[in-house]
Length: 375
Length: 258
Ligand code: HEM
Image (cartoon, rainbow over all chains, first blue to last red; front, side, top):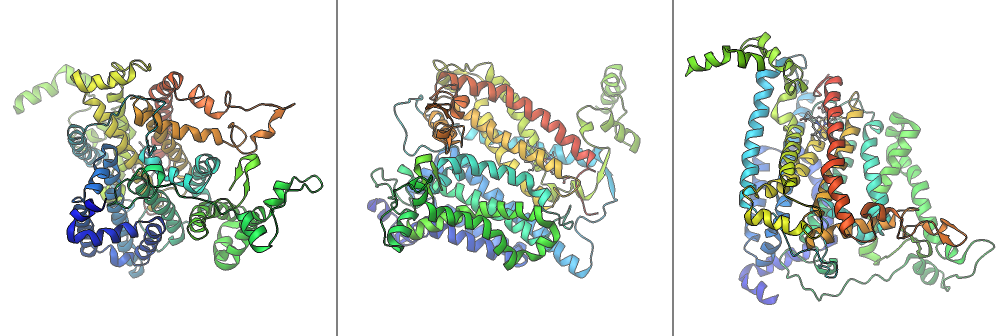
């Protein structure tokens, strides 16, 4: 590994810094900070000149990284090519959307008509729309044909149930879910949370009763809805996919983008349980094991964790109401408010658990292993 | 040339296929849309702002196009591929080695990846233009189901080449089903489902077993995924797409400021 890094000569210090910045906590914190900086300064950052410069610089950085053998090894995996495309297209279209939002928001302030104005101007589908569709289709077909011819679809060794690859990765579009497995047991990461993502998405139009921003790009008229949705999509989905693809190696260990995937790096140890922190650390007692009346001992052992999780979901909605959401509550009413806050709290479980893992090396908040019920 | 073109367009054959004249004026242009079973997915006239490329990015359209590409290439692959453990891998290898249009496998695979990207972008644009707001709430819900089905299509297809990548990705994925609360053999609270000490849900009948038709990713799983991938999910998607497109029109066409 050191040899490989040394071959990068002068740039090795930069590479080491980048490897460091890509460690899970830094990577996520930086992404979140950039995310909010972008949303706050969207009118500035989306100006074509500025956005173009950022785009060009990122492309340059990407190309420069391609001089590193470890980086190229990951990028070159045929199945990883779509992720690079996904990153670029999501960035581009986010820019396109926010650029139009910025223009519209400015126009609304000045009382000028929107980009999408003229709702009554109708055009015939033939030729106006049919030709747009045809051109899109032809260009896209050309793109797909080139992709098909240039890049071979991967085919590895025949399936062998006795030889497990390391790391065994899900297809890239599910890597966000696989990353959740680091922080939660499969019943949450693989079943309940994905289910709630689907339910939450379906619920969006029934929760968001804000009548404005229907049918045109805007950020100013619905900042909360857009921020929440994009936090889920960009940070908790796209960023985690990037993370899972490029920075997770053997044994699902973390590896920097310019690091060699060392098979022998030991697995991360998780040894802090919440019940240990409370009973042993704070109360100075042994873990309770005795049953009490009809309540089994392990439930008493987990009582602190159960209380904390319970409080999160009971006090959470009240606290959020008192602190931030009075206006929203008035707009959407009791039922919608509770559904929304529950979904929001569930979504935030992920970053919260991540933070607990990084700071306390926490394994389970509630660990009723007897029932496979661990949070 | 022009004369030949006119002669063809005025002949009986052309006239029997396209009932309208050359779409040059308002009436024939409207007829071109109305009298064509494919084009009449569209209304005759649309809001000007709705068709600007910078508004829709044509992402829904591209997603639909990719779905069609997948169907065409997929049907062609079905002529060659056999969903049996003994043959599956070597059929895929054969596609590369000695089938004239074996490149279709590449197109099928990359098309699937592309479709996932375009469907995400489509959802992003629908969200950012607020197009899920009334009266389009229900169509957004249909869309979410379509999104889930698209991901499932990719997931089921991933197993079919029967290589290491396929088998282990599906193993990782399907192991999760084991942890379904109450329905997976290692799921939370499942241990309470028992009669006289005999567990009702165990590895031989839990959610994972239902998914794989067995306790491991083997021949039954391959056949099950094949049928889901080639028949069941595409049919459901097709039906839902019909609803999706129908509702776009019934909800007043592409959204726009009121
Ligand atoms: C197989 C997948 C899908 C296909 C082929 C598809 C296709 C389309 C097409 C062609 C349109 C017309 C406007 C446009 O191109 O943007 C459209 C509109 C729409 N789609 Fe989809 N869609 C799919 C998935 C989704 C998903 C995942 C969602 C949201 C979760 C969604 C929600 C909507 C809504 C609400 C509209 C109306 C937008 C408006 O009126 O501005 N669709 N869809």
